[in-house]
Length: 344
Ligand code: SAH
Image (cartoon, rainbow, N blue to C red; front, side, top):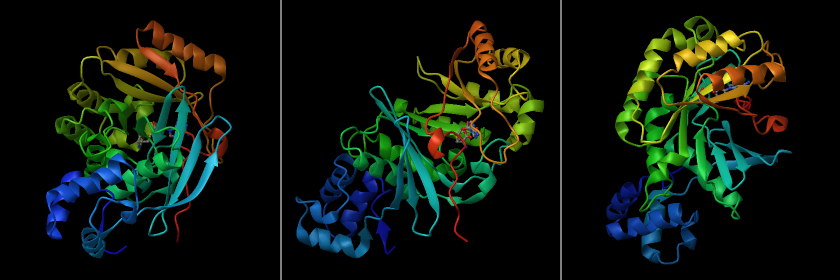
């Protein structure tokens, strides 16, 4: 790509760029409005921008988007979008309709470096971080693919660890939530999920972005969690729960906890009671995710009665909990199933 990518610039950076090419800040605001508010991704279609401004802009900058390689519809109504990046890397995003909601699950890295034992994406290893443009483009393209319904909610639960790509994540969120010239999403409709990078969680809390936080917990003791998630050796449950309690919450806001149910590993009623104890005093919502199988995985999904028995203990313990049956299982789009080949 040549020059600056307009996608992924903050509206204020577009204003600066307009000044740099000899125009007024107002032209930059118009540019942001076209791209983010109207979703127009072609400079030639921006009819109220003077021709000479567009020409000078085109010498310095362009609209760079990843190529949509595939859109795979699932029987359950979700759709998996596979993008091919400029260096040949591939990522995916998943569109999930639910009543009047349309949730987009976004990727933040090509691959992932955290090696959770049960996660297929984790077997890829980390290739690289996405830049802010590549994160924002997933939403812009998803919205352009479904003009009949705009994306209403976003979850950073695709490929990669969002908090390991901190600066680009925060920049993308600022573009999504800028109400004046950005996309205008309420931060309460955006959820950032993490394996539990404690320093980055604290930093996120201080940004005042007000987005929802989700923790991939999966075990209620260091013994169980440490076996499943290597990150637990760097930040154990005590450190993690400390950061959770420091994360600033609005009055009715809660922290989400994801707990993948693995047969014989973390699915006993005793495990459920430990989970209740761990989350005592935390404004928590527990999402139980029955394990999604993938080839050569050594884990198994517990039988339904066991899943329901686990949920019952958590509910009786006073926690809000739902069983989250993943969408897109039939198309390799379910939690932890995202994996696209990395080019050699
Ligand atoms: N790296 C971040 C964002 C990914 S979120 C994080 O881990 O939070 C994806 C969620 O799906 C995580 O909670 C992950 O632990 C879970 N997951 C991974 N593999 C899974 C599988 N095979 N079945 C069910 N859930 C899985």
